[in-house]
Length: 217
Image (cartoon, rainbow, N blue to C red; front, top):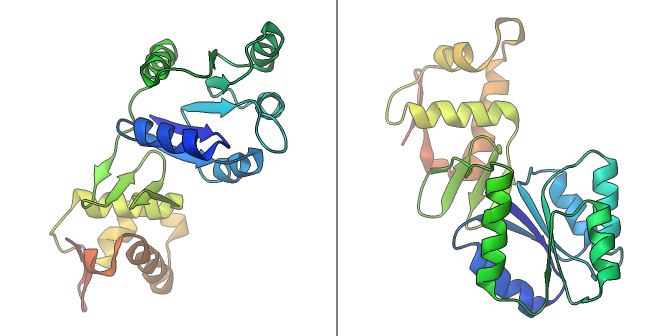
């Protein structure tokens, strides 16, 4: 499950990230501006938003997201204890609300409840090494916990390499399996995609077999 956490308390955010990342992939935003930056590149299964953050608050952010038809399940965490803010959160489209201070296990239980209700499956991933994780459905690679977005073609190409590990793959085979007949790439275009993948996962992963093709190891 891919989670986006927005929390501007540095101590609490560190605690939450350490806890949540033991089980899930979690991106962090300090404020609403950073939330939108993450949303440009990634899809999330769950939002965990603090209400009272610097700048635009979490409730107003969620209202905007719902207005743009973003229906990602959302849990609010907040120091507010009155029913007014509770009602505002649910009116904005929240699915759950947890008041600070709270036990980490309580948050964990609420996340599992959201996961069951919305039938959120754990995102399939492929470990390319101890520090590199590939999420094909997300079209992302995580290198030392840093998320890197891939294009659709780069995702297909990397998936094909992984499925054909340690086997010589010719340029013709790559083109036939990744591109449509009416959009065949030039040799320069193919080399550009290979170069992008090497920059992302490491040059040593994809070897050039001169005059024959490529091999992923």
